[in-house]
Amino acid sequence: MWEQLAANIFIAHMHHPVWGWADERSLALLDFWRTFEPGVRFILLCVPPQTFVAEAILTCPDPFDVQGLLESWRLKHEAMLRFYLRHPQESLLLHADDALQCALQVIEHCRKRWDFPLDASDKAIAVAAPDGRYSPLVRFMAAHLGQGRLEEQSLWNEIEASLVCLREPGQRSVFEATIQEAVADFHAVKDRLEEVTNLKARWESALQEIAALQQQLQATAEAKQSLETRLKETSEEVALILQQLHQLQEEFEHRFLKAWMGRPWAIFQRLGKDRPSQEPGKAMTARQLLALRGENFVRAAYRAILGREPDPQGLAHYRKLAALGLVGRMAVLIRILYSEEAKSKRRARAFWKQTRAGVG
Image (cartoon, rainbow, N blue to C red):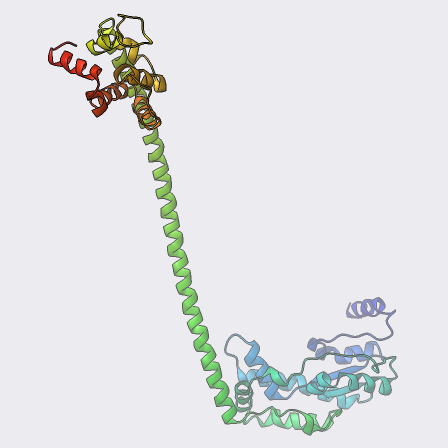
């Protein structure tokens, strides 16, 4: 079954002159792939045990077993070293930092050694440098966690002696960090942690404020709904009251006019004799005057009491008062009758005489 799967993979890539894959799980199948296809070539990338631990510090969310981690490193690198020593013509054993920072040299080395149709002369390969990945604190911790592991250190020394060097060992960045660098980095991390803690506190406070504002908004919305309901009910009540008042006003006017129908007021009877616009001797009854509305009523009242047309200010003022209905029109008559101008007129004096005489 495994041979059939491997054959399918190779058949799918037959049209590529050079192809491959990268997967650390292939370590267990190195001998299988070599036997299955003699033309396969292997590039084996190694990292120091300190780098292996540092990567675990950065990527493992939970505390990890250092001893188990270094044991895993030893088994993987021991398998790569043994395979390389058995098949040095079919494999390359490289330092991972060299493979990343000297990618063009790796391509050129493969082209020359295995006659691969590769051309790296004009290809720009952008690879992230690993030097800045690990902080001084992480490097210091990784170095000290691996101290005293003689078996792993011995294996790494053997691997370094077998590496295909693409650059001088002195050109590689020093992994270990001094205690001063680690302490400075620790304080920097501590400051950042305090900033994160403060930001978290501010974030939680902001969340609480948002929750409080949401509650206030909910309470405001409920209060608004309640007020709108009360406003609607009040508006309906006011409309009903206004309707009832209007009905009472109409009933009052009807009864008032019915009671006074045909009875002339003495003041209008007396004034009617002097009005040029009225037939001689004809009196104006309450029904005739109070039946008028708006501006017509105000003008008639001015002519009847003061004998003149109303001025613009008086017309505007009394027109608003007369718009209130019968009570308003009666108030207009009273105000005009009690005005200083009315008191100085002969018509007004006749009114006062008739009033004192008890005529109404």
